Amino acid sequence: QQLTSSQSQKSSEANQVSSEANQVSLKKLNNNNMNNMNMNCTFSPELLAYTISALRKTRLETKPFPHVFVKGIFRESFYNCILAHLPRVRDTKKSYKMLKKGRYVIDVGEDDIYNRTAATALDTTAKAPPPPPPYVPKPRKPRKGELSGVSPEIEQFWKDFKAMFGGEQMRNAWLKKFDKTVKLRRWPKEPKDKNTYHTKLDQFGYSMHLGRDLQEYQVGPHTDTDNKWVTTLFYLPKANTNTQLGTLVLQSASKKTADDFKGRGALPRLQDPDFSVSTRARYVRNSVFAFAPCKSSWHAVGNVGQSANSQKEARAINRDTIQGFVRLMGVPKAVCPDPIKGKP
Image 1 (cartoon, helix red, strand yellow):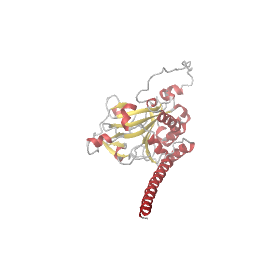
Image 2 (cartoon, one colour):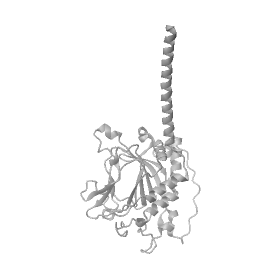
Image 3 (cartoon, helix red, strand yellow):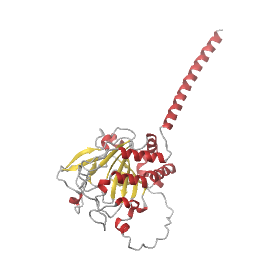
Image 4 (cartoon, helix red, strand yellow):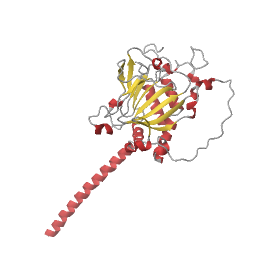
């Protein structure tokens, strides 16, 4: 009888352990299902429609130059999928190409139209040159900074991303958002009081690359090059722990423009007392900062690792972005529109 009682007690304990184990397994299963529910990697027209709608609904800030900061630019479930397809931090120097000190990039896609100039596109009387023979690339090993240098799964995801979010609809939405700025540019062979960029949308390209900035990276005040009509910076942090890494929107006390630095070979430094911070875009999850470059669209990025409390902490900080540019060469930047009137 004592043996039976002992066996019964052991059986009861075993059942309790088994029940607890099942509860743990069930909890893990529910967590996995929850993670799966919060990550949707399917590209659909609805995803693009959501992003364009978020852009349209967000107010355009006009001071000191037109810019926009959109929170929730992607559906949250898709944003989690974006994070899951970023190369690992430890693979940065293996997969990315170093563009400058502290900045690493992977080209997601350049449009064929990228090198086409507006002057050529507008000259309808010139005879088109004969088409070049088909280009057949020679087989070679993947290089740093190319999608072919990452895993096939990551490569395919970013190709699909570029096809959807770097296509005509998104390009046109960005140009429309900054219509008051881009229409001030003066096209070759057109009257000074006329700008019809909206009839030439097929001439614009939208290039994209993944950016990863490490502790050494910083860039002083600049307005962006003439071939960039709209600059879009999608912020990709996993958590909102380093919000200070966002882009600095600057203004010049003496009203300096990009023209004041032509031919000088150097741009102003971030410590230049003539420049002050008007606002800072917060580096937060699932957001984008964008503007249309004009002659006084001064912006900068502070030292990425500067706010860290130790060298070890600084090394752990990275600034992941998707950098996109609506481009067309041959049309110089215009004076920024007046914050009130919307004109130069």
